[in-house]
Length: 181
Image 1 (cartoon, rainbow, N blue to C red):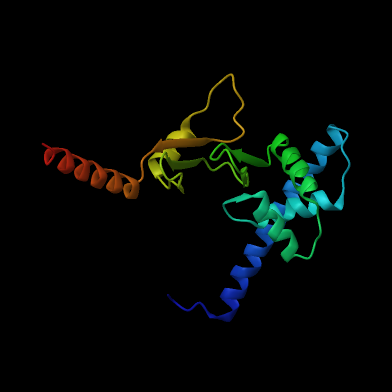
Image 2: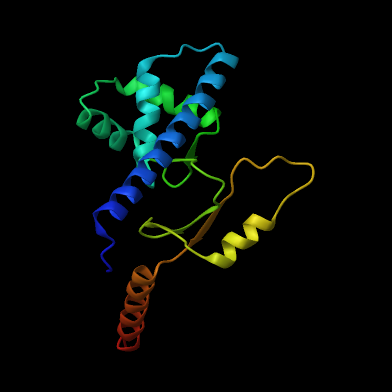
């Protein structure tokens, strides 16, 4: 990895911090407008939760969010976390994924970047698909009579690990039945 020097590294970090700050300001303004329009209270807890969510990369659960808030030494009840995430979903600042029936899995909407996931039907492992072809295809889809807020594709199937395990079981079963009289 090339060395860029102290000033270049400092410039990159400052640019990254200002980019993150402007994102925080933008989503805070959108959330504030949503709360006003829906006659909801603007509490510091709600905005602290919003900031914590937009600092998390990738997907998270309420429990993950609770740990993040505890790490920040900001005490918030579980009920407040659930209520605030529900408001953020309604405000189109947060996605609630239908991955699991046991725990709600969320992800922030930070950009217009399409998201795609593959989900194993057996082990329920979730992996993000990083495909330029799929992203390009989703980016070029612009319906005329529908306003798109975000794009998500869920692909269900069997992961390689589970597929290998199933083939082993099938092979063992077929050998077992061949040896039966």
